[in-house]
Length: 68
Image 1 (cartoon, rainbow, N blue to C red):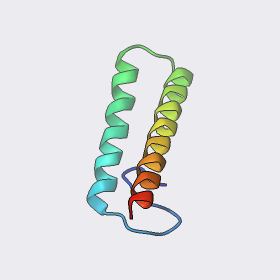
Image 2: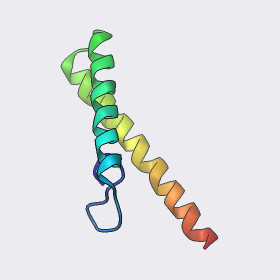
Image 3: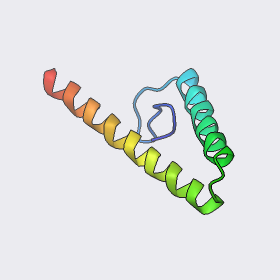
Image 4: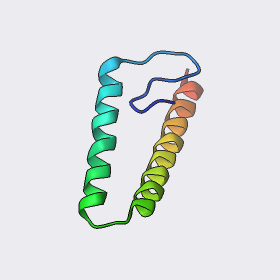
């Protein structure tokens, strides 16, 4: 998955969604940096957030697949 909802394995995605995803990623990165976190912790926090977002997206997709 690419940030913003565009899947690398195929499917649909929108350029606007990817752009919003990049802006959100940059904003999170900037906020964490301004909070004074070290570079290594910044990478760990962003990785954990991306993992969380992926798990949430998978749960949403699985739920919508069960309904149809």
